[in-house]
Amino acid sequence: LAKTTQPISMDSYEGQEVNITCSHNNIATNDYITWYQQFPSQGPRFIIQGYKTKVTNEVASLFIPADRKSSTLSLPRVSLSDTAVYYCLVGPSYNQGGKLIFGQGTELSVKP
Amino acid sequence: GAVVSQHPSRVICKSGTSVKIECRSLDFQATTMFWYRQFPKKSLMLMATSNEGSKATYEQGVEKDKFLINHASLTLSTLTVTSAHPEDSSFYICSARVTGLAGDSEQFFGPGTRLTVL
Image (cartoon, rainbow over all chains, first blue to last red; front, side, top):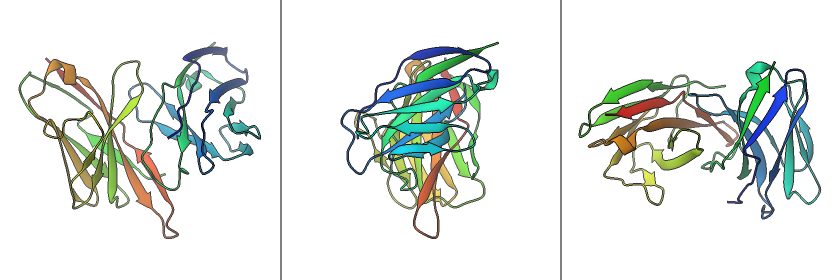
């Protein structure tokens, strides 16, 4: 499974757009990029998944350049409740249900 | 999404005792469940894959005799930490895989169990 690199932490303020970038230089052709969110003392929660270009849902957007060696999770207008750890995973599609290997994650802190 | 529960949510035990953690899929059947552990400020580490009716598959470096996994039904997997020691204190999280009619599947995570060994 491809290794991922993310910033360890990020700070933001309420109402701002937050972009978290993940590097995955050795991503394989069949790999998808999936992002999870984890609040303290809770299990992770699926946010979004993409293969290429751009994916958007009600929570976030995921931007993937043509070479797929990186991806950016975009959270529009964050609130205090978006304070969490965000994990970027690269591997089989989310809906193929394979085992998930979590990297270090990015601890996002949203301030008032 | 589907709901996965864990019991207990937190447990404190004495060193040398065994602790059982339950993972249940509440509204779906899960032939496969996964167990993770997470130390403070660290990422989730996959411990093992639990398959209903068969032996669990452990990740490299995880002691199978220390962390006993039983998946006796399609809605329940248990993790027993045997002869617990303070270094086993951690946050244990399970996930359950649900497979749809089209063959696709998703994983849903439980809320975690905080184990503290004194």
